[in-house]
Image (cartoon, one colour):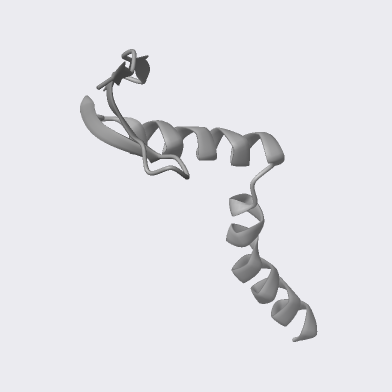
Length: 81
């Protein structure tokens, strides 16, 4: 009877042993999830205006534009106004 109980418990626990990941498998799964999260990435653009004010109250405005194209960052020169 006791032998049957241990066999039953062993059979119940067997699937959990096969689900355990090695560090390599875990790393591969993380990489796959990361890749899947970045699929469908859409290009983006941004335009900003930065206003710098010195202690005397003088203002300098700078326009900054940026584009990200398929993970390639392109930063355009800033322009003083």
